[in-house]
Amino acid sequence: MALMMNLGGAAASFPTAAVQPRPRRRVLQPSCHATASPAALNRRRRPQNVPGDFFVDHRCIDCQACRWIAPEVFKRVDGQSAVAAQPRSEEERTKALQALLSCPTSSIHTHRPSEHIIQVQDMFPLPIIQDDDLLPGIYHCGYHSEDSYGATSYLVTHPQGNILIDSPRYNPKLASNIEKLGGARYMFLTHIDDVADHRKWAERLKCVRIIHSGDAEESTVDVEWKLDGNGPWNIGTDFELIHTPGHTQGSVCLYYKPLKVLFTGDHVAKSEDSDDLTLFLMYSKQSVSLQLESIRKLLEVEFEWLLPGHGHRIKYKDVQAKNAAMESLLANYTS
Image (cartoon, rainbow, N blue to C red; front, side, top):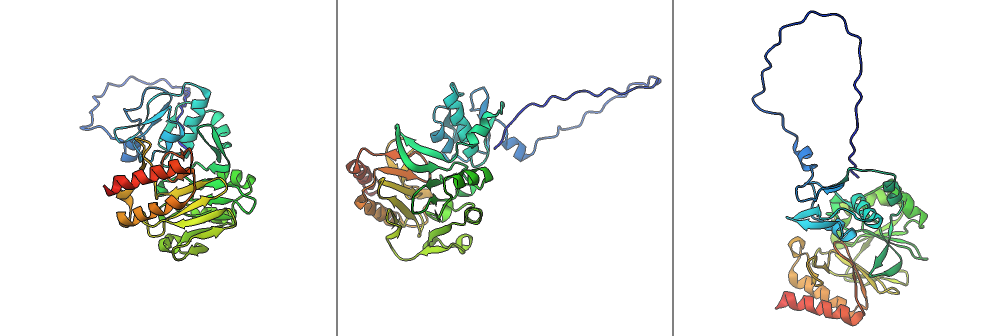
């Protein structure tokens, strides 16, 4: 979190002794002025921000998080996020502060820090609400990590054991709030790119971590449960793990059957510019054909909610609408 405030300084008064006036000396001007460090320059306000309290600095990595957390305030301008409109209500200010706390590079600033930020910290994890529909027992963790390029982490509360999906940036306050919701029995890692602070979370929550063996690299070698083969696998009675290689060899989606929710990691997401689905092909480590084959596998899965690692959530009208979107995606990439 980066908060900016102006600190006023008081001038000290000292006793003085009588002194003889001295001739004024000519002050030589340096040939060049000292310049700010690159890090300081990156923290400056982007000129694309509108004037006012909130602003985004040059360190923004264009992860989209602020733009779907507080879309009334933040927009994409010249390849990075910027404040397009200052908050006009208490609700918009709250969302802007939620985006500030979630920003993976601490690129969002406010000139007016207040006790309100403490109240917003207490809100995380945030209940998932989309188009006025509430997903009971499913939360957005916030505190996105730069190590995961700002990917979203979710918490699912369940009588058979809570599941933390992908790793948020470790934060003691968030950890305490998750513990108040019952902690986590499992930490499911959708793929190698979004593991972030998984070790710190495992140590704090004493949870069993899950990842596909195809993504078991040096950073995840100590994960307790490594999935082998093509699956599917189950966590209890309500959760199915679906192997969807393409983005990475070990990409896996989690399907929460009773609520018809699919957590997709980086396998598939909503386009920021339209309602179409898209693939992050520039970051994919395997072939397009393999990733499309994994998309076809999801036609058989009866989900209506799509919760991605990056970007906007989607609530489909029904399974048929979801399948139509999947078929359109396939047609776009195979035509």
